[in-house]
Length: 510
Image (cartoon, rainbow, N blue to C red; front, side):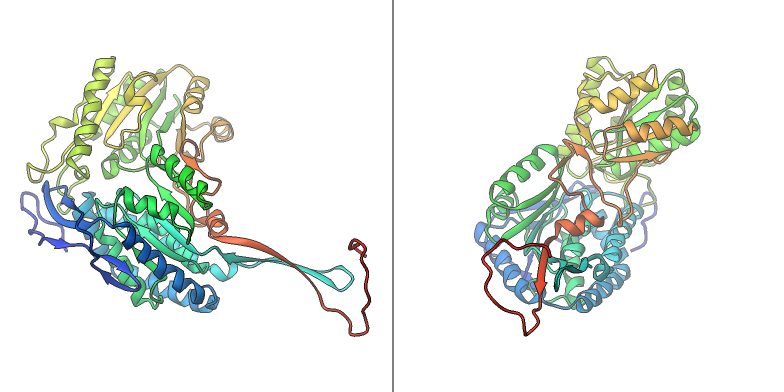
């Protein structure tokens, strides 16, 4: 699809019901419960998605459990061949995936293409699974005794993913889980479910056996069943902090290993010696890309005086150049995902002003290049925000950037460290000593130095601290491989035929 010219309405999208994907094929299901899926740029229902019952979740898990018996014993060569084929298919269908994301999430097509590309990086990392699963070997630890370690798959793994990255976030987990020999049940967001079905078809075309990857759509009913099902051994989740805590506590109570990535309030600290043009560009890019619906978006700009007035002015100038509209047109920022979410985010502007903040740019005044029924909210900038205000304390998850003014580096660091979230942060400075001190002292899982969104490459792990992570394992990288495998140590002795006899004493290392 080519991007639509400004002022031209996109072609109407036919109403089409989404299906589950179970045992290698579409599964319509029998439930009568459905939910609407909107095209956010049109403010209209695009399709509908079935909300699975407990029985339908059980069918998906049963399919995954049956497939695990043979997939876990498949050779590393076979798994790698499937991963490489899947990588080529996803790359070939990037545009189609991006268009599905834009139609249901609202982000601009170029941003959706970037999402697919970042997901592909994890697929490429997983293609190295033979090396990643190598164990250790020690010969002759005792007389004729060798010890070696191996890593084995855990079983059926559930992945519960959010609306903001319907392709990339599942790819943080699914390729590594499958490459390690596990089987997967994915529960995507019901707000933008269609991309997951195209991904399922690509897995099937890549040669993945039926049942290894399943998709079941749903709401809390489906989530709770996955957290309780005895055949599900591991759960990966990304979403808000309250739900992440619930997933972690419920899953672990049912004997599962859980990695639950929660919310964020990402700070960008700007020191007085920073390049203010670079900092202003970064604040706009990181604060308003994908309409701020990113767990790594910068939402709190902590400016060390005396440069706040200058920086705010530069940001305001840049906001004025941004074009908000339908993501299929030549726009910089699209709509928010639902009307309810748009209204909730917009309400924080009034709350900030009532609490004493200065509304520098009001995104409610935006004139969007799109249907008037779209879920529009333009980039918004609040200055002189105090730490006790709700615009600072809450994860807004929208295009609202709050400026907090402080008097020193120490005050900025204390503010970041006092926040209950610890997902990502950044510092902008030309002082190498200050940057090195910040990266050592800040209590956050991912740190950027003159990089506003410090999302690591796939061979490093993604995840935060404090209320941004429940569980011990971050996503992808070495921690991801360890999460989807269990270590086993084998001690072996092959006796000389002449050796024998009974000895009831405690074994000695001789």
